[in-house]
Image (cartoon, rainbow over all chains, first blue to last red; front, side, top):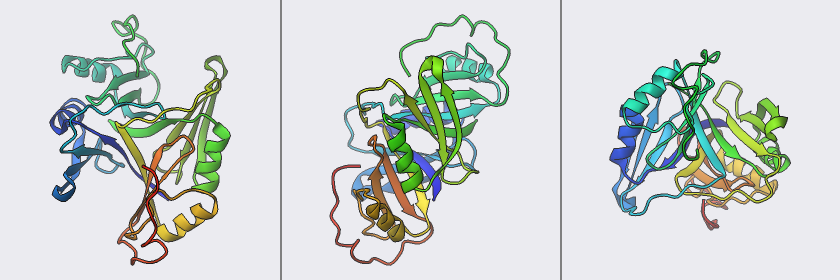
Length: 139
Length: 139
């Protein structure tokens, strides 16, 4: 058995691609349009040689997708968690759990999918403004 | 950025490990007990060199975790989808979406996490009893 991907559903494909590609920096590795089923699958990855995230876009989905508890989050490692979160903030993404500890942050996608960001390697030295930043919402 | 893992929550760690290790054949690659937070994290992978699935077990969780729609499933490739599904059935796992097409099946974990099984490479020739087997439930 071999891990292939994690699938999430997105209500608005354009918003989702803006978030994952323009804001997080992922790349589209594959796309499949299925007109007879009225859905599109888009596979995104942080690097092309890793298992992708599969976005399922049902063309006629009119309601937001709800969130459950059995699935928690997808996690990505980043080179510098402070720089990464600062760029996200500048792009209008709310840092729900700021990287107070130089190690871990949480954000949510437009469809409320929880995303954990983890500093690759040792935690960075604790520093402001992150150390004093308040948590927001849930993740 | 680099994909690290997908996290799911499990209400009963023993049932979850029985499912993922004994039934699906995954291996435990790492475990972290956090007594001060009353939780245990267990990282499982199909092969040790792939990104793991993280199980979060909150010791005091008394209710089942509910499911949402924004997260869809995790997908794993298998060498022979008929053999794999037959073994699962013999182990008491319900094949919700049988591999009628020699290509794709769906099951759920004890916490109702949807799992897609995909034949690696070309689909297998269509064959009974799979071709006539009915779908059950949702996935």
